[in-house]
Image (cartoon, rainbow, N blue to C red; front, side, top):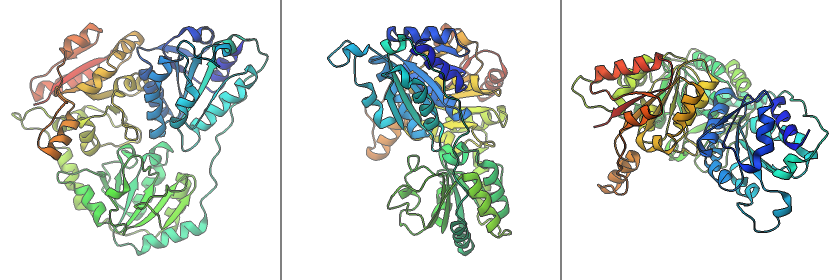
Length: 524
């Protein structure tokens, strides 16, 4: 056994099924070790795509996704997807190759200090500079990546370490460390604050979905009839069919959800990550009573200074809080729920031009409750966040921490490998072309997912912001290829509907069909 064999054996011990990556010379021993293992190595077309695949795998499964790249440009290309996992709290382990140790003390071909480069965007990283530390380091990388709050870790293996003989075994995987039960006094105080509130509201964040706390949150909402508003990454924590759901912080034809938060006098923040939404937006005057329920203490922030913090396993914290509060209160904003859902479900008039907002009700109708929608970043993301109803947790994936464009197509690859339900990718023309080459990965693997491509020949979200601020836009206009022909050149069946009826037919056909499909929606 050499260092590479031990590294891969450790990955097997962690239950890794896929490693997404781009091969490199310094990874030769690692690649052949993967060939001889139970792990499937998935060669991709760009390291950023590999990292996004690992990122989405981690979000969907709760198990760390693994991405692999060589030294120098391979590592630098990887870093955006790793940073995305870091801010989106997605478990990911990145592995990079490196030149031999004999040349790392001096200027050398493609050699960069990758460990220090990754330091700001990972929970932990190290160089495997000795075969004797490989088993401990891999176990630590996975333990920290998956431990709440999860995130990215990184391991660098020099090529001479990978080739060096070693006599060691992987460390066995253990149950994850969990927080103790919540402090009884904190729960009692929180229950008292809720009892005194006239217009309480729950803010469901990424943590409510990530920690599988949805069932307990739904029990709390049903007992207390407290309205719930979600962050973009908290969508689905409570079903949007529930009378208490107000969808997300920006939902409604006239921002009714934001209005409800403005009226609320008590906010129960469940698994809320400040990286998603600045609390200054919903607590501008710092007058709201805030109850923080999360696995970690609250970030120190002028506009998010909770009155009480319940720091514990989120599900157990919700369970204890549900037991401590009195039920029977009437939901104070059911009328807002109806306004938001009615607007979200309104289908377009036949002569209405194509828009993201009116495409969404058609798409929602074509998708089952447990089908997965992955949104790229752009103007369409804002509409999906605000107007796409979600009924089950982890079925609408939006990057809202780093919020990096280009995640959707590689995310579709990872999602189709991870789940049995249908997968739909929603992207704009800008984000699509950043990682469109991963369509080849999808066809090579024989995957089945649908790309819905909203095309406005523009970096539309930036244009909208510029026009709102200045009345004009600059530097955002694009020219695009024939996307149908482009997709077909990869062996992907594609359509460009010209009416709403044709769009509905195309979506229905694509979602239920085998093989990757693309539906282009040409926006007015």
